[in-house]
Image (cartoon, rainbow, N blue to C red):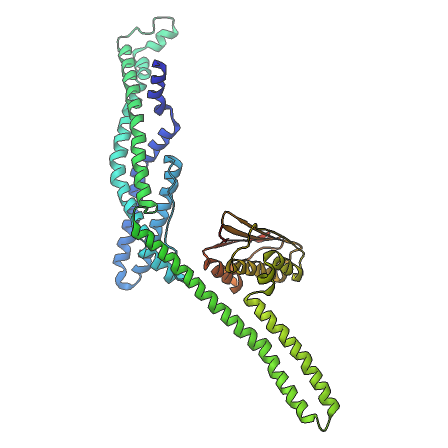
Length: 428
């Protein structure tokens, strides 16, 4: 029982986590000085230059730098304290610099980050100074016999075969060693307590404010606004696409059809054979126009998807793609129509890009429904380099997926391969 108690007493001193926590506490002072310097210079310069309007960008950059410093603190808390702190910031409601700036300034998480950075110096000053002093004294006391043995000549005496404790000062040094070990052991029990206190502080200020109902509701409201903005963007994009397709395709064909029928009507008495040929050509053009209108309607909601589901729709898309495509659909139940449509257009747009730009020899489409989420993945062995910012197709897909509270990730490094992944809620 005595050995067990001794192990429990000395266990914190031998723990790697204790020393890691101690390093975190000792680093509070230099990090606090660095954060104060960063914020002081940034806010001071921004306030001084505010009259010339140059100060506003400086202030925004300071807030962004404060977020970056808070990210460093989250990493340190995770590595040294063993505390994972989630990063929760508001997503910009609008795209662009203006939307980002407004989100940074109005987000309470930004200001809680700054509060943590400001508190890092005074708290680190007290704890770092205390811990550094206690540890220094403890280690000096622990190693006291070594300099005492050298000074007193006990080590040379031991090497010459004489009695080691020939000097009266050496036993006193060993007493200091025992006192130093006791001091370090007691401190090792205090360090985890301070570490837990810092973990709570970091979680409260750097993490999501779980205790604030108003903040949670605000986050939900921001998400609703983001989804609504994405939905509006999708509707506007689809309207422009329909207008463009009607104007460039079906409308032009119908105008030409009306002109041909008018000419045929004028020639039907004088040149019946010519009029007959023109009516036949008009009939063929009518069939083409109907096909274009059907394709346009399929762009709104494909008939094969509505009638037969994702498996058949993916096979149809793969059959129309000039690149060989392997498809695999694993769903134990049919998702709702909105999710099916979004998944269909993710695959359709990805396969279109593969056919036009990727230079791929093969592609693979995988759709799985697990845990209430529909996972869509399109993989190709092409040249890569897919960038949503360079075209409206992938950006429009991102808005379509975001409108359903889904996510879209595009991994397309230069040289390939390219992987498009989407996750959509599909119920249970």
